[in-house]
Every structure is written in structure tokens, then in C-alpha cells.
Image (cartoon, one colour):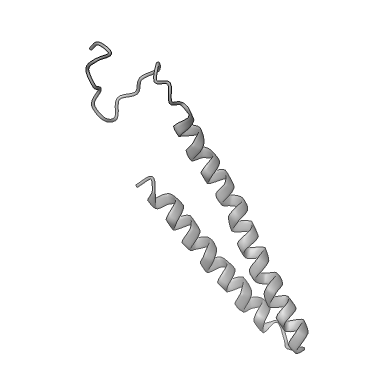
Length: 84
């Protein structure tokens, strides 16, 4: 197969000048971990601040944490869907 013939999808070419595509995907998934941690911490912190402001039991901390988990799950689904 010469260089002018297109390769079928799925064949790896070691001379392909685009190795950054796999690195870009890896960086996206590594940054996803940071995004998950930030969404969980932000939800819990905002809930804690509301609890302190209202003088309530840790109700809003748990609600904020649950919202942070929901955001983290949605971000993960959106990131993984690009590769399916």
C-alpha cells in the first residue's frame, strides 16, 4: 500500500504525524479527575456555607454534595460519550 492510497479506518500507522490525538484524549481524561474533585468540593463548600448562614444541621451540605456528585456524573458521561 503506497502513501497515496487511503488506509481503512482502524489501521494504525506508526508514521502518522498526528500522535497528539491520543495525548489530547489522555489529557482530557486527566483533567476530568480534577473537574470531578472541584465539583464535589464546591458543592460541599457551598452547602456548608448555607448551613452556617442559616444555622441549620448539615442538610444543605449534603444537598450540595449530592448536586456536586450529579454534576460530576454528567461531566463524566459527556466526556466518555465523545469516545463511544
